Length: 139
Image (tube, rainbow, N blue to C red; front, side, top):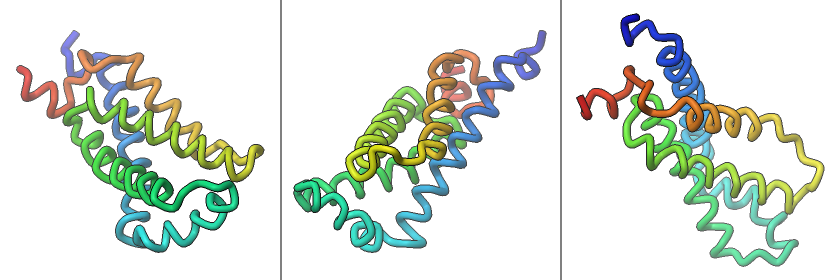
C-alpha cells in the first residue's frame, strides 16, 4: 500500500494536527490575546496562597505559554517532534500539578484530551509520519 494512504500514517497526521491546534491556540491566547502579565495576575494569587515563590510562578507561566505556542506550531508542521513531544508532556505535567495544587478536584477534560493525544503520538511513532517536515528532511 502506498505510504500516503497507510492508515497508521493518516492516524498520526490527524493526531498530530489535533494536538498541534489545541496547544498552539492555548499558547496563542496566553501570549498574544491575554498577555503573560495578565496570565500571571490571574494565576498568582492562588499559588501564592500555597507559598509558591513568585519567580517560580513566572517561570512556569513563561515556559508553558511558549511551549504551547511554539510547540503547537511545530507539531502542526511536524518539525522537531522528538524534542517537542516530550516538552508538551512536561507542559501537561506542570499544568496538572498546578491545577491540582489549587483545586484537587479540578476538571481534567482539557488537559486529559491533550495528554491522550501526546500519548497517541508516542505510541504511533514518528516513523509513520510521512506527512511531516521531519520525515521530509530525513528522506
